[in-house]
Length: 94
Image 1: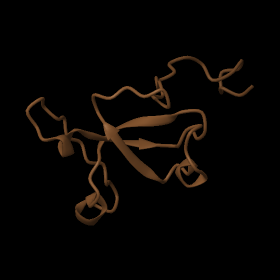
Image 2: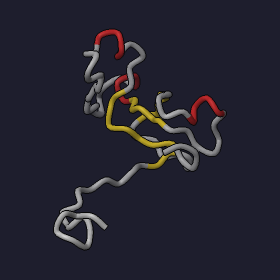
Image 3: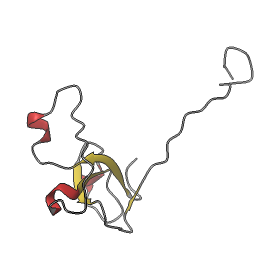
């Protein structure tokens, strides 16, 4: 998860989200509109990239970028459910 490019997250960035968020789910979702102030258009970036110092390569470290910005060092992770068999036998073991 760390190293090549940092990863966009769907959560909005707020410095104080851990202070007012719930302990079990600090996810802060906000879909900014065009007329919102710039501070409301920040999205969380995690994982660090080739241009970052070691501190930002930790997956728990958050940074931000504006949601309408394209950078060569920020990408995204594709995720999908697998609906097939797990292995060659009926228990799914290999």
